[in-house]
Image (spheres, one colour):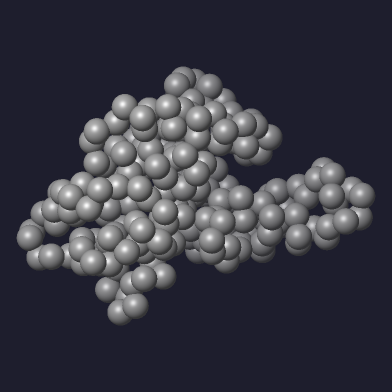
Length: 208
């Protein structure tokens, strides 16, 4: 996974530059998430999930406003209201936040999405739709990690740190779902213009 942090920095910088001239509310929110790096959109999803007390996977306008505010998103109230109405297609007064996050994700070409899914399937050794420490054993080699080599970390600590890199900094649970994996790489993808380079990077990183 060498180079991912560089892509994070490139993407954050690119997003900040584009944000200064952006007027579209959806794109503005997307860019604000991407200024936090590859896990920015995923982090917003975590905030929404924590707020979803009744677990109906939907948010009303008040919850939506609070979620954006809690995540530190700077937007005018009328922009948030316009954004909410855009997603509340049936006029029910609530939006499905999973659908919202999928739309918020920077679009990936079919070829990029396929290689990301291949990497996920390779890592999800147990096939249960979630990558855990158990899945990584025998797939991801911890022994080359400098902190493992100098005795500072155990193999499990290397695995956990690896999984945390896909997680929002606010809620690390040591599990990575397919959606979280795609959210992460859609962020990385946003900083790479060439499909060929992105696919090569993925194939090299995961030996696909």
